[in-house]
Image 1: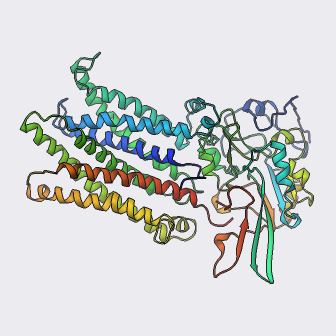
Image 2: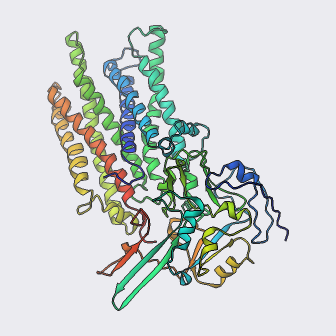
Image 3: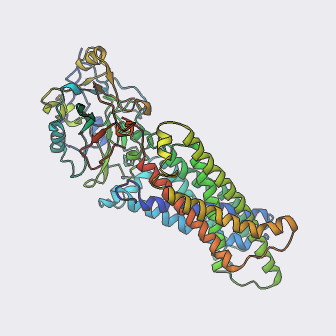
Length: 256
Length: 321
Ligand code: SF4
Ligand code: SF4
């Protein structure tokens, strides 16, 4: 298949991405083959994109080293106290029957993103060309409605820009044909990035051949980040004196 | 208690002030129209209080909202104008437009109550006043409704995600609006030139007090239904609502300030003064002290309702991961 790749020179803008840039530089994938159609039509939330980027996280290969969290911080100069990407530790049980599992977290780039449907300015939208959910920091007024609406607490206000901010799947890297920083840095190769709509991509094959889950499925946002062997235990699940402790490693000490 | 929350005191004050202003105008415009379709209907004096006090809290509340915007804090003073460059189905977008029209209309409406206002003949002023009374009522209800819809639109916030929340806010808005009008009237009574005016004063006051008892009754019922249905479910909603039920972190605040001070006590006092006229057609006379204390309690309760609801919605979330 022919991948139509249009790159824009000097498209180095990191978090200050504008919508014009997005439509100018077709987010074309060289990772996975697939024709990229440029479209300028009004973005409907549920409109199915040709490419839907997603991530598969194999938690069996994650050692909780936080290299991804650090890479993300460095890549975007994320302000102190804020997190685009973080790794939670889930401890449970009583000695000797104990476990500690790791749950890497990021924006799920949902197919039914509630953050998009509540945004009053249209600053947050789902890109038609690759399904990445982005926030235009030049348009966003920082009303925090999307922070309330996201069931994954994936968003924060970047106090430097005054805009809502979150993981954007490293759009500036992906549009140049390289994988996101967290995927690149992962020492256990726990993270697989690719086009979920292409049945032949590595990520699609792994999703098809493994038992996978998504987080908070009941919220109905249709996440595009999948997990293998995720520990879904939460402190609120602890009954009968069972010990469950979640360390979020972020300013919000508790999951919301 | 609001530290670290995305929406803090400015939003809480806004929800309270906008609801109160919208309620005050809706209630007083309705009462004005009930006085007969003449510009000097029998309830024009109380309607004047409503018209004068309504626009200010709504405008102050909206201003507070701007101060809490992340863009404003980061120094982009006018980024909020982006709200006016689009209209979409976000409750905040629809609410912004509603609020803007409401503020504009309410300012013009107040103008029609100024004696011999310049730039307009009294005839024109009277007919405009009647016309705007009809127009402003749906807008007032709209503003009151949308504050509840805004919070209710998100499954990720189970405490808010209930259709009855908007209804609760509407009834509370009307009740606090009436309280605001009665309080303003008690604090700044003006001159009653003759007995007829004094009687009219009490007649208008009676209708408002009687309506308020009914509204508070509805509010208590809605609160009960809200809590009961939430408690009867399992999972997210039950967990969320447990913060205001006995044993929860917001329970004492909720039951003492919202239910007792804001609803039960004022309703009982109002009932005590309303019943003799309602049942035995005695004269309605309410001491000035009571006329001040009761609305003050209702307003406190209305604020605390927003306070508890806004915090409860943010300290709870979906259960499990
Ligand atoms: S995870 Fe949250 S921020 Fe990301 S797309 Fe889904 S709803 Fe939006
Ligand atoms: S904070 Fe920005 S992106 Fe989020 S809903 Fe408000 S305007 Fe939209």
